[in-house]
Image (cartoon, rainbow over all chains, first blue to last red; front, side):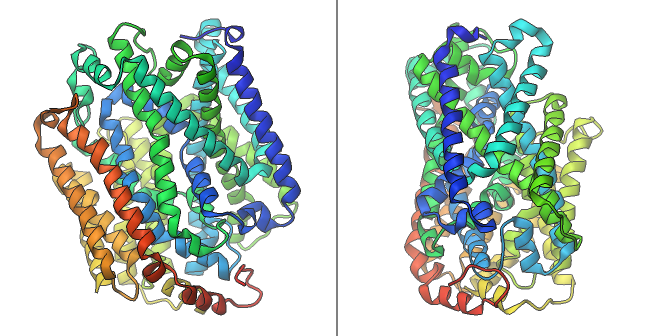
Length: 501
Length: 139
């Protein structure tokens, strides 16, 4: 499957052009950055199209472009339960959190999600708990991006053939170096404008790869027929619950459908829109771009097993190799180049958001929660970026499972910890700081604890999305119960005005 | 009324979803986590002064589509008969459960935004509530 680098110069050239374009955008953005507000929330100057594309680019990562087809190769079309909620989540985000978060930024200095928690609840404990949750989730999400980057680099450079079992760790190390350079030197400056550029590339790559993947398999009808007729995959591959228990499928839907309300890398983009009334079109822009991007998941998720079933591709050693196997083995070089640039965009735009968020937690949110201020914030921000990325690299090397499953854990941690106190707390005045703190601690602790118990086979039935699903349901229950049971809390006038708007 | 109903639904469905995931009850999980909780959260966020106005119709329609979808997925053995080469339940997921709610809820959100989302008067009230020195960006 791996090809020598010199045989595919256009792919390497595409990657280089991509990094040059990101670098140029970074320099251009840096010249426009004059204040903290410019740096953290792009000066609150974005239109709805840019906000929608940037949100999509931050949300969709290596998880979608490499992890999705890999997960589908392993569990069949049950993987689509992750995407099933995309039909209503853009409007759900709009109704519950987007408007209120943007309005909070009208009345207070709000740049991060722990900032918003601090404003809403006036509690440093709640804000500190949210910061810890963001840190845990950021390391997990960055780990998933490094897994994806390592898989891509290992395939494109042919490292598995050259280095054997050391191929993957070396590929992750190269990915780590790229990510660190991008995060410390370029990504922090580039910010949201590269997200928009990357989002556009992702859309182009996803649509083009979907079309070519279907035609490689002989058209949609032939693709599904080959899979159904194959002894290796069979019709069960195409059934919603053919290879996975119903509760796991439901868990994917639940975690990604409701957990979306706690994703800091997406919510953070809502602060950036220039005019809060332009939020009107956000769900259609965001949802439309997400659906187009998900074509790559469906296209490669079906085409790769079909090609294996037709005998045109050897069975995959690792499911996560599905995307590189197709691009290097079947796609014409210009398309493979575009796709590699699209995948790099998906990985880098998300990784960029998380290096930013992780560093912000360590130098801004946690010290603020402890009533302290870090001097030389920029220097320590860069040190924090390195620390968070190294922790993520260790996780990527030792996780030993699919990209999509690590992504699910990270997404689930954010969802379980933050979704209830944001989605309910910004829409119900009765939610108290004690309830929010208890909910955030419950969500983070349960998600992490159950994931470890499941992985260590102490509770072996807790796998895939189930730890996060249980943690999210528990966190929501705790928020409601403690709110009703605790003493009413007075709200500041400006926060009250935001909640009543 | 709608706001209160949404809170009641949340209070009932959240612990029920927790039980369903802990005890392995897919049908209860589908009803609570797959239909009621998403609907209740949308209604909670969309309600203005406790009411949903005409938004109740697209929200209920979306909940109905998901309820029918979950019933089809869980009740049909092997996903049902083939439609365009895919089992019926899979075809429903790809061609109905993703695009239809996207269009219905996306359009409902946009069309109701000027009355039930954020009016210019709402925005003025929020900006007027801004206190000096708190760092907000309101004009």
